Length: 370
Image 1 (cartoon, rainbow, N blue to C red):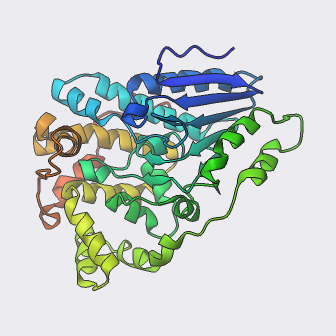
Image 2: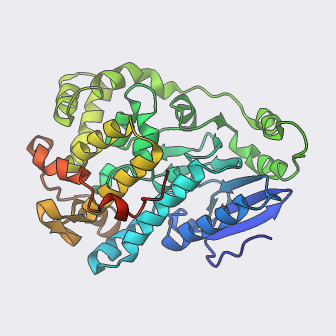
Image 3: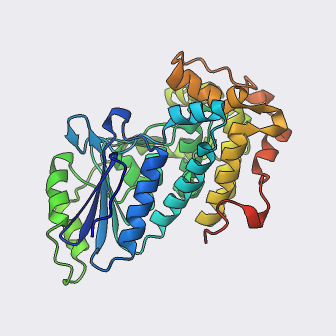
């Protein structure tokens, strides 16, 4: 009954009425390929309709074994190669990945994400919709897309905009990494579990008696612990600065503040793509009033514009996203040539067309999401 997954990077198993998924691409920090997206989708669709499957659990792996790392995102090297080659699989990747994100958010059975180690980008997309999101002392969580001239996609506008106060804007714009306790405090995780107990917790899932009342509640109580989110001591400053109206106002106010945190945050923002910072601020604030389906459709529009920025006459190597990936992951010179180069040079006319859909409503690739 276990679905056959032709992709070796996704291992599936069925034990004790629980469908078990292990991401098995450790050499790439479990970055999602199109094949992995398709395997995950096929597996979840099969298990969704199988009465024998009571719950699903997903974990990552490292070169030394399971756990220790969840998923570092999408395969950005593939994005780079596909964009330069005009490979239509790039379009398929984002359409199918976002549909998978939507499926997880609306999954009718418990979906338990073991978010140990790195959980970034696409890794957030396959975990934020989980009914049970577990983090550990090793969790390193972020949506760092502005560092590569992209935006926090995979539903990032939806789940970041629902973080308390203006912490969503802060995470989306800076791409800052947060720990497990902070993730719980911001509503991006549900329980903190000591990493040493993850193997025991994984096995215990397969031994649950699903005829009992609320067996998962008992399981959670057995393994979850308490941890302090000390990093949230700057929450007041985050709300103040990231609630300002524009990117320029945010950065200039941070630069005028004498505190170490404000200076470091401003310096981080100055390194990010100026164009995409403006797009991202608009994305998060629009998404605050959107359903998940509408947000994913907006993000599908945005990602098309990122690789084919027709209103700026840029595509392929000239696009902000391909240049950002080149600097970070291909040439690794960490010196992206952003265009415009400065936050203050970005105009409304550069930003607004990102939010115009390239497709008529009836032809949108995600028109079926509700």
